[in-house]
Image 1 (cartoon, rainbow, N blue to C red):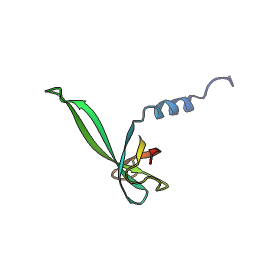
Image 2 (tube, rainbow, N blue to C red):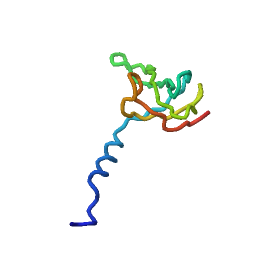
Image 3 (cartoon, rainbow, N blue to C red):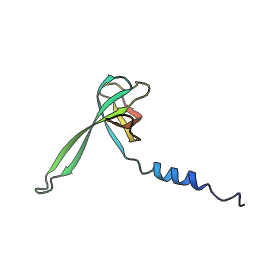
Length: 96
């Protein structure tokens, strides 16, 4: 056997983790236990008229330590489904 060959399992897991979506948004609710609601704003051109419009989307995010407060700017990452609505987890709090 060749001991210098890289481990294929670890390479594929790192490659898959790199494909996870990330978003930055603002916390609008933290009333649930270990869950926050994050609002993201995306600016896209209108498909027909070309005017830049804002698309607002809300995500339910897993916050294990209940650290995020309303108004915080946070980074979130896509993860496995944790409940019916939660498919995202808190990565870091960018600004309090």
